[in-house]
Image (tube, rainbow, N blue to C red; front, side, top):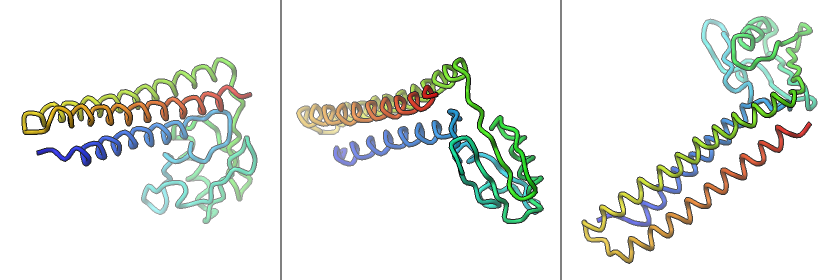
Length: 186
């Protein structure tokens, strides 16, 4: 017979993963503010192997519009610049021989609207995942009735599942609202 508590815990964990995925995906979207997370996907050729940027350099934000990348080995500056140019970051790096600077441009109103749409699409995918988890667990609960779970327990579990679902949908909406506010703030 199905363990209702474990099933609901599993559902909550899967919904949490969808919310975490959304947060990570939105962190990578450049909203006119310097954020080191936009470089998280950049891989640098270091001594013949491709490694994450943060393993060959110190990445920081000295101000709201600049990302500073200080390589531990000054010979790596060219490789770091090449990796940034080849990535989908979309910013041209500048260097002074010691530090690579990325100047984050102020997005136009049209670009901000585009970014907001992009965020909402990613948010909708996260909501769909949460809904899919709910549907999957509901299906398991329906099958569990045939295996001997009482209908009252199944109804209680469904109500609990709906509460968890609503909590994560609200959380996703809050994350999206926060990101849209950040994007639209000039």
